[in-house]
Amino acid sequence: MIEDVFPPVKLKNAQIQAHIEGFLKSIQHKRKETVGTYSRALQEFISFFAADRRFEFRVKDVERYRKHLAEYKKMKNASIATYMTSLRRLCQYLVEIGVLEKNPAKRVQGGRRPTEHNRTFLSLDEVETLFTSIDTSTEAGLRDTALIRAMIGCACSEVELAHLDIGDMQQVGKRWFLLVQGKGKSIKDERIPAALATITAIQAYIECRMNARPTNKTIPFDPSEPIFVSYSNRSFRQRMTVRGVREAINIHLKESGVQQNRLGKLTPFSLRHTSGILMVELGASVEELMQRMRIGWRPTAMLYFKQKGKLHSEHHSKALSLVAL
Image (cartoon, rainbow, N blue to C red):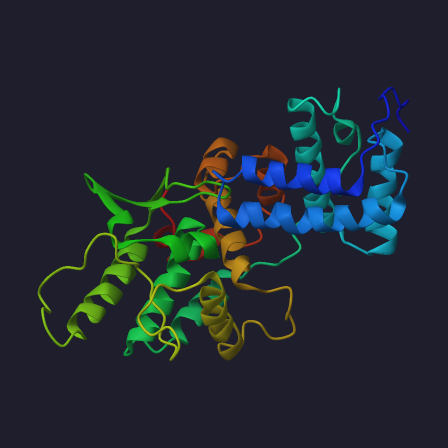
């Protein structure tokens, strides 16, 4: 353990609760999902703080909290990292408002970084099987084809797909791009290249939606209209939720047979992993991959390079059409 040189600071339960409320107010400019994650994680810290009665913002106190998450709460490394990041940000806020001199949580490591992805990827034969299993004679089928092409072709996440508007498809010369809202961002400021096959699939879906309208079939949708809409009874033709995107793709992973014996390992997010490996095999540099996949930490990008060659994309004639580099 690193020598503890942090002066102890003792706070009452009501004080730490008030400081957490102040911290959450200070980050209201961030995405709602980000604020929600910090809020949920810090609720666990509040419970620990009240039960522990010895937490004085020293390094050993933070280490004790981390041990509590790992051994008592039985959290996995990814969850521990999230909870420790929340505490680290709270402590930094307390430094900024003068409650603490230093941030003790900076001296304690979060969850151990993974050396490989938890989820697997699809082979290019499985990608083809997935596409051919979808009934594209229906509006929902065209939508799901476009969803899957955007995930594989642009490495879009479920959140990014749910936020996409029709106006986010942009053409510059002969190239197409999608404007996405990156992780932790409150605005759409990431423009990523889109393969022609992806754009064609999205346009076919939008055209089908236009033709299904009882009137004004020739009038284009407003640019602020969502690209992907729901067909459930409760939210018919409203913007798809993240959960809706996930469920739609999961249905096809299961019905196509590609998910067989890999339940929990092959998920909608596996499509994004497939995209990353494919881009690497087609010649993307580390910097290009980080930009294309909105990855901020270089070692995370390097995980895709460790899997280079597993897709054998050189043997698939359609590999180049799946992504745009």
